[in-house]
Image (cartoon, rainbow, N blue to C red):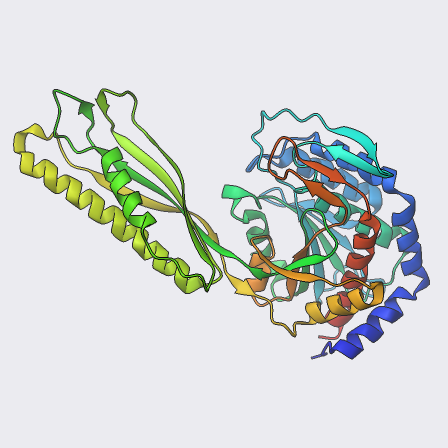
Length: 423
């Protein structure tokens, strides 16, 4: 197995950067900022709520065709896949591949007004629209890199799979990337994975923040607040359970959080509700801590329901029945960390040295959680530019210095194809 030491990685990156075709790819990105920002404005005008990304998938598939990718197809969950082939390999090669991906979905409901506005700001293009940065910046960066590589005919040592995936945000729970990694045709072939998410050119997510999310439902017979007094109340039991859960001690290290996200139930102030529902979010860098919190949740809910039912039973005939509960897992993102000597990190350090920048390694919850947890060299990084107001209606993106980030990603991707080809 080929090793990417710090010195050999830098030698490789320097040689890649000196190639005439790579210079041509850089030139394409330098000469087409207007093309990129116009595509970005077009993209953000297409709604892509969780589980409603089909229109954006269709748009991306059309762009893949325009720029000359091969093997273009849309899978069962609306992921869009295209290939930049390795020049010396047959189209049906089953060897290693490098994945370049960006998520298509946004946090915004389908009815959210999407009115992208373009302007100029200090010599840069500025786009204001929900989703302009997260993740239109990543999708357009991915497209720019793919088109630059294809048009300049950079000779790749291994194919690059270009993936526009669904289901990264919220209750999407990384479903697009999960589905992608379940495909038998790719089993054992993915040598490295670069995720493009948002703006920026000086950081990379290499530690995957794990999370577990649950929906808790407590049901009961309900009734009139006066004539059925004594009937067990689902909201009272839920409130008791959540209050107990909120008192669960949390360690500072490993970093761990607990959030009570939503609670709802009931129909009127003078009705005993028939049900109450709450959502809970646990996050940690430790899978053991996530398991501990899951156990605490089950214990808190079960105890609260048992105590509420015991009180109702004690009241005898005044109670119309008892409570039941259900706890459903609605999110599961694995916690994992990229090894410090991972080949993709060594390659990134070499790229940074060549470009005279330094990457800040960060913790985050992204599509890279899946490959990192599977032991695949992977990270998530910004696609350049700047942005703000993420997940709000006031979200914006500026393409200032986007080119630097795209050069960084291109060099990293080509370097990883060379490493992959030697495995």
